[in-house]
Length: 128
Image (cartoon, rainbow, N blue to C red):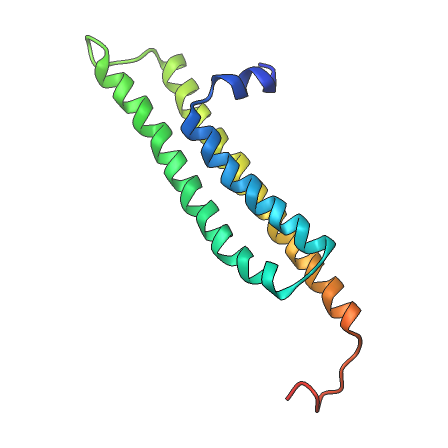
């Protein structure tokens, strides 16, 4: 099993940027759970959409790189181990990015509970 630091050094700049968008979404969610404000919640929605699109783009970019390297070989085929390694690297980007996004929305849910708890109980007539 390779070292995670070695794996991170081997992925492309595009894959690192893709994961950075997920890290930004996670950071924003962490800021929201610490100080839940409406402004952060409103910002979380477009940032999470950006993370979804970046992740899908990163996955497709990885698969494109694998297919392009297959086509670049003289006989048009890659050894299976190399093909599987390339697919695994592209799936790693999706796994990390979607994992960060899922954790971010769990933090948003916790922040929403904190915000509701801090605002105190409201009467049903006040919310209508």
